[in-house]
Length: 69
Image 1 (tube, rainbow, N blue to C red):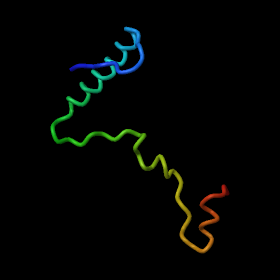
Image 2 (image 1 turned 180 degrees about the horizontal axis):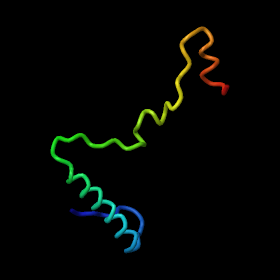
Image 3 (image 1 turned 30 degrees about the horizontal axis):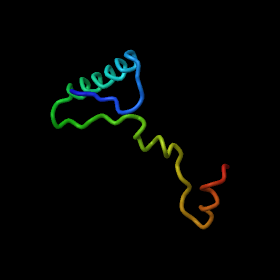
């Protein structure tokens, strides 16, 4: 594995920290069996975006979707 710094001038400590993260992610990915679905993180969970139920459709729905109740 080759890593090349394209911009900036990282210190040896910063470069070691970045390399440790890359190695840890690669090790975690290699422990999954082949063909297994990758676990979803909470950042991509749709429930995070729509935490509240949307109002039921109706003639005044447009006014309830923007203004806080």
